[in-house]
Image (cartoon, rainbow, N blue to C red):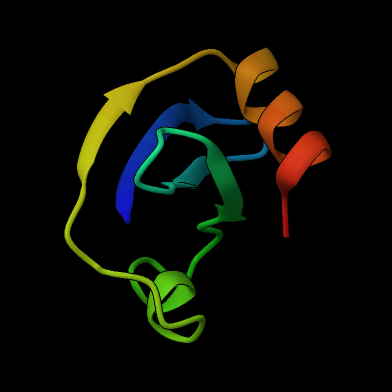
Length: 71
């Protein structure tokens, strides 16, 4: 499994918009987890690896990932 973290900055109220995207060995998205205020704990409690790279994304992509695959 491969995990990346996408960062869409904060919303106008200061809430974080960050999502962990989990890929299987074929490169397919298997899960998208909203980081919220948990940080790595959001991954740890689901048993996913906590090693990842962070990339910037748009608020629209953040919302789409959570709507399609999110928790």
